[in-house]
Length: 450
Image (cartoon, rainbow, N blue to C red):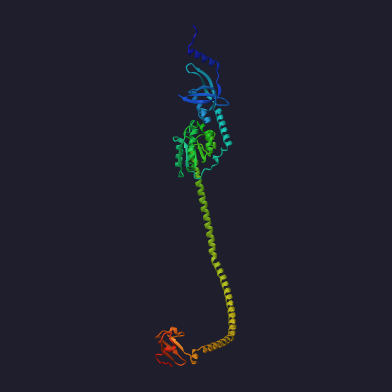
């Protein structure tokens, strides 16, 4: 029969071989593919990727037992400000261990936080370099916090203690300032930080005109697990955001990339609230200062004008007397000039009237003679035209209704006519028509007017 051994014996041989072949501890550089805690122990999946790609070229499991993990973890997080998470590069001190029941594993006895810190710094520097090449690194810092920044869009977890502290401090500020705060909930811890915060920024951007600034806060716990704020995509979104962004994500270590591109960086959510309150207080102080300056300027102006009016009031009597004297002198001079002008004018008009009066008498005499001669001529013409002369020559005038009759056809039978002679007149009645011979007419009466 062949010689056989049990599986337990085989595993013990492997254990003895490994312990003899690998008795020392080794410092190993690796990337964490997975990290989980259970019963106080830490279980890690280590991976090494191709230098020119992301294809794994080596993989191993590692464990950090509870008694070691309780010492290593606080020190690592205190130095780096980060919690161990997938994708992080670490420098581990490990030694080989093979257990008959659980198989082979690397046992972690220490973790060098300075190596991880340096790797994180290198990543941040690379992101900053890319942002500067794109020309967006300083864009958000170039925006100005509005003077009256009271409409605040907050990106935080709704259940975070830091958010509650932030709201409480704004509401209970000692100056009585009013703030309008609207929460845009996001995951602020773990691998979903980047996508969640970017989604919140997109929601704010859709109604950006309703807000004065954006506050990204995280607090109320440990300052670890902040790698989600050191990503290029999130930094680009914040750098290009149209509103000023204030960060208060609650850590004391070096600035994250998010802090670098934000408009204003403070340490904690309460510090962000204090910053906003101080901003309004500064504005209020400027207003009060301007009010005091305006009041002082107005008072100085009033005092100056009062003094000037007082000086004017004192000088009014003397000025009035001087003006009155000047006006009286001017009036006297004007009166004298008017009197002289009037006398001169009257003398000139009197002389002209006397000259006209002297020339009127001969003109009137000549005019009277001319008109007298013309009147005499008219009298002679009127006398020559006197009907009485014609009557005395044997002519007569026949009148009908007071009008001279020059045409017999205008007379009708029975008409009464008057015939005037040089001496007296006779009244007749027409006894025949106008077409009858004159001999047919007869006088119906012999009345002769003397």
